[in-house]
Length: 228
Image (cartoon, rainbow, N blue to C red):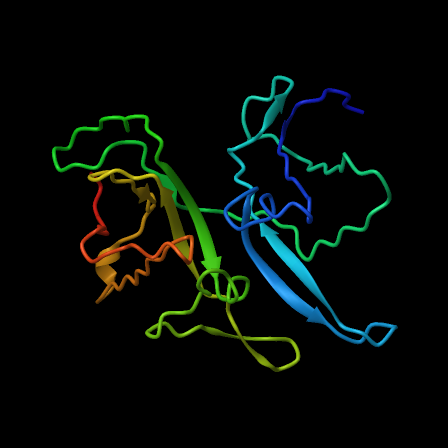
């Protein structure tokens, strides 16, 4: 037995009565669904709320021991604290997801110089949304672009299923005029010249439904393809 305690610790608050904690955009919550439950033993129906938590691996709350990085992690341990009585927690799905996009750590310009981003109050998060998990997200549900056709897969029982379709989500707050942020992906042994046409679909929205103050010309999206 290895009794050495070396791990990264992440904290998630589970307080259904605290509206401020259990809101989208707070406490690592990226989506929520309200489902009407029928067929209860007493014949009644009730509303249940499911929350989707997405915890960034690099944003840990505590480092225990001398663990240097994420290369030699073999186990995940979960524990609950702070409850006064017995509870039941239901987890619909628990999984690790991979993100091939990385934050660009330098300012965006056309001089070719790599100047570090000046510290500010601006926040920038890279996330993902998909049609199967976020079709009821708020303030706007996720929808597949009209020009995109979901691929079909053959299941064991002969039924044709549609593969999940997903997109990259960029969330930023407290940007000043002229601020810019970017994400990058390193392509290994991939020649984009084999494609006849590249299409990119962009949709912008406010995180707060009532705060609809985005005007034409307030934001610009840029895509760069190249090795420099």
